[in-house]
Image 1 (cartoon, rainbow, N blue to C red):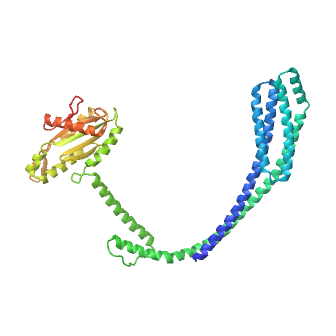
Image 2 (spheres, rainbow, N blue to C red; image 1 turned 180 degrees about the vertical axis):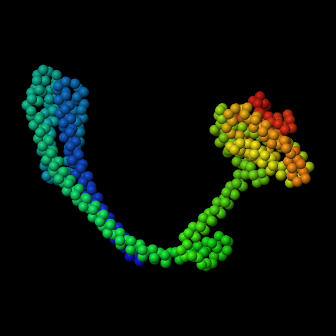
Length: 423
């Protein structure tokens, strides 16, 4: 079956290729004849342009008319050579071109003579040039050139019509041939489908069974399933496997970027995020780096134990996260230190309201079973671009401001001032 289909496909492909190649040759002939007609028309137009430039110069003695005149002379030569090259294989057209070439040379010689006489600038030379024009010899040359070019074009036009008809017949034959092949191809496809069902889908069933067993971590074994659902079943199994992989990948990504205890972003994510944020900030769109330290956390750990200490860290992260805006980010910097990166701050004074709200969230104590723990914060703030746009320096300045706050009060904040001495 496959051999028959292969032979039919190869045979049809070869036939269509041969017909198409023949059609391409006919199309190239049509294009070639179009080019001959186009170049011959351009040749006559350039001769006319040369005559127009010559007449303008004769009447006005304005040298500007010589520019199109000389340009047309170059184009006449170019287009004549093009027409000659395109008809080298046609002796009849070559003979016609020889007559046209002779007449063109005479016409151009007449134009050149009158231009030369006018350029002399003497009354006699001007009269002589006018006399040459009045003889109508140039007009006769142009009439003969036009007549021969028309004859030349009529011959090419007749050839073009014949070539175009042959090309259309070729395309029609290809269309009919392809149309007749459709029923045969349909029959072959039906047999091919039955053959593939027998030779391909049954092995796929085995593959599906093995996939299910491997997914469960069990050895593969034969299983009976609906023979009409194998493709859908295979897709479902692969989708399920894909979902499992995606969930595991998401979990791993979360673990890499977030602190395992508090669930907020970890320190490794802070530096690249802060670098990107500082590059976008401006005077009208400031960035605040808020450095937070839990006061007397070591004493709290010693008094209540590390379990309560961990719970304090988790609750602190929870309250910090609920206190900031949706587009702000909370990071655990290390130990009992947290960093908040606040974006889109229009004015420095706006940060005060945010920090007051944050401190108010810690007015109520933390209650863990039988323990009631009061937690206070020391907060330092540095702004970009006011204080710096360097991420590391901003963190350092915010840290310095935090120590200023820790020295000033038990639960408060301090905004870095440029006059503050750095460590």
